[in-house]
Amino acid sequence: MLQVSTWVRVVVAAILLAGFAIALPNALPDSVRSRIPAWLPNQTVSLGLDLQGGSHLLLEVELDSVTKDKLESLTGDIRRALRKAHPPIGYRFGTPGADSISIQILDPARYDDAKSLIQALNPTTGGGVLAVGAKAYDFTDNGQGHFTLKMTDIYKTQTRQEILNQSIEVVRKRIDALGTREPAIERQGDERIVVEVPGLSDPKRLIDNLGKTAKMTFQLVDEAADRNGAALRKVAPIGDEILPVLVRKGQPPRSDVVEKRVMVAGDRLVDAQQGFDTRNGEPIVSFRFDSVGAKEFGDITKSYPPRSQRFAVVLDKQIITDPYIDEPILGGSGQITGSFTAQEATDLAALLRAGALPAPLKVIDQRTVGPGLGSDQIKAGRLSAIAGLILVALFMIARYGLFGIFADIALTLNVVLLLAALTLFNATLTLPGIAGIVLTMGMAVDANVLIYERIREEQRNGRTMLASIDQGFRRAMATIIDANSTHLIAALILFQLGSGPVRGFAVTLGVGIITSFFTAVMVTRLIVVMWLALRRPKRLAI
Image (cartoon, rainbow, N blue to C red; front, side, top):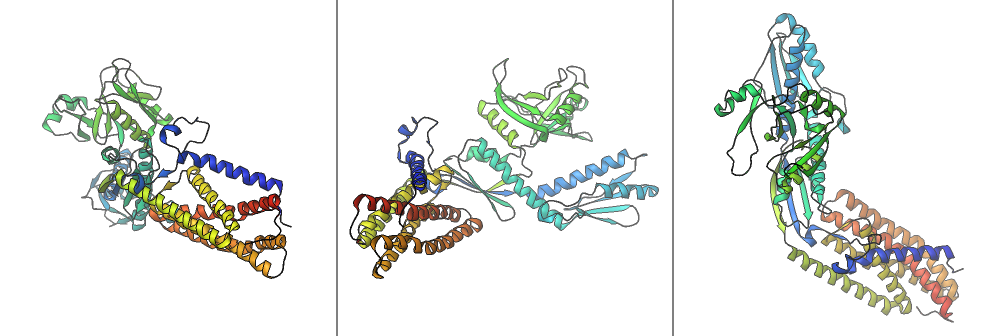
């Protein structure tokens, strides 16, 4: 018998009320929405780059530098291992290749010892689909103490995948730290990243933020070399390097001679915040190490008498500050002072919190989409959606009369629920997404058409009015489920395989299919049942 239980009515009413509450802020002006209490829904749909305007960047990950860093790291490990051997093993490195290193052992009696040490340092591949446990470097021995380690192809591929994935994650963290909303960050090919940030009209700050590797290290200043004028002569002693120092505007440039050995690595940082120096009110960046970094930092700072040794804070091969060690710092916390503005200190803290990029990024393409274009597209999209809604509504009324009005009410509620779902899940609405909404409105009445045509068929077969309506809803259900399932599968495939505009279209289409099924089956049935209970018609005109 045609009826709707009380609990179904309550659930449908609750869903519709929640949908109205969530979708309503989208129709309110900013001045009104800003006065909505925080405990009430006050979010709106996020507009994409093509609607709101913003910045589009195409970044290339410089993976060649990663290979070079890997080889330098392995070279340093081998050098330290041979020096720490008992007794130390004499060696000489050959000219490094693009993906290989070579070493000659000077003492023939130590060939086997050196070979064992070097092979023990050879890492294995691991992680993801390439976790085969193979050696990362092919090891060759000419039998006369000349060893060569060449990076394997599988290790190169694995390294590229890991670096690209890490770069995407760091880029996402840095953009989120700038306070932007709903950035789109996607991989393109094997070396590139596409970044779209809606609402950011000036990409300079974004480029400056992403262009910094933000590799921070803590290194000791070579005081003896610095006093001897090595920085002025631009000749660094073995084991040292000459780095520029960040100075205030108007001050002469200067450099320091620092030891290449990293005393504390920047990856030991667990937090960084912008603040102000209590002595002079200048902007600073306070930082905090993890337990290992805190111990290393404490051991170094208590190893030197006060004011006898400078400790350089190096960011991307530039010394941010080089203060003297005044006292042991055992708590694992400190602060970085320098020629910062408040904005620069905030950006630096955000960079350190996000972590260092595993490889430098190069801007390949930069575009800015003006808000005027987005405004025109929003108006065109709004007009197309309204026109589509009116035309579909008129067709349903002309075809099915009063039942067409019922379908139009369900269609309007479908649009409200669709907008509420996009708002609730923080989905980004793009121009293809608007196209998906318009298409959804045309598809939303398909279920009503199936139900109404089935009711007509039951009437022609001689059933009563109530029986025809009941059977129309029941027997059309299987067809409606099949049709919506195939559409939903298509939307999921588009979302999984597509990117950018295709995904925006797939999101609104998929959500619209779910909401249209609910409104066409549950809401329309409830409206028809309420109409029958109130009007008690003698005959059915459909």
